[in-house]
Amino acid sequence: MKEWTMQLFDYHVWANDRLIQHLKCLPEAVFLNKVNSVFPTISETFGHMIAVDELWYLRMKGNSLQQIVSKSFSTIEDTVKASTILHNEIKDFLINTKDVEDMAGYHNTKGDQFNNKIVEVVQHIVNHGTYHRGNIAAMIRQMGYEGVSTDYIFYLRDK
Image 1 (cartoon, helix red, strand yellow):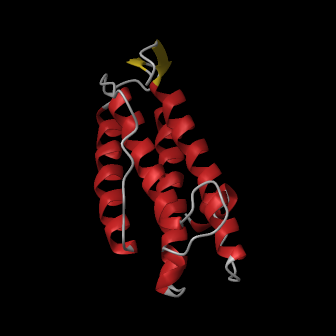
Image 2 (cartoon, rainbow, N blue to C red; image 1 turned 120 degrees about the vertical axis):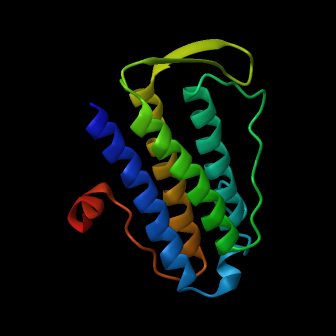
Image 3 (spheres, rainbow, N blue to C red; image 1 turned 30 degrees about the vertical axis):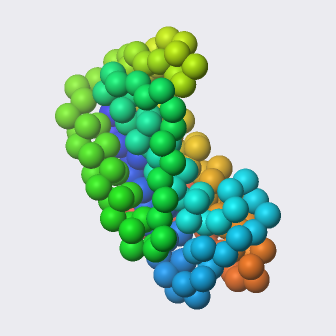
């Protein structure tokens, strides 16, 4: 189960990186252009994704936040830096976790107590990321550019 959990998280990191590398090939303005979507810009979408990854990482470690603290990035490079630091911390945490079936107890932003297995939290992180990568792909297309596939099967083929 640990190997599966590590692979899921590796896919999450790969998919984010693949999307970021694609964005680097587009005009810089694409990252900050406003469009009608879940979040107004790709920058804000990545800021939300990284903030939520951090929230769930802290919960896996037994810490709870009262609220989601959104991140703000003005450049793709700032996004890459923050994402790399956080995702390396999460990878280290998972590597050092003896059993991903262990329960992580935490409080949600309303103060309610919950318990989930670490593997379940990782699956949630990945699903959340997939949802917002889809938002970003749609945003890129709304601006008139081609997207890039971040499907899991492409990750498997790439590895």
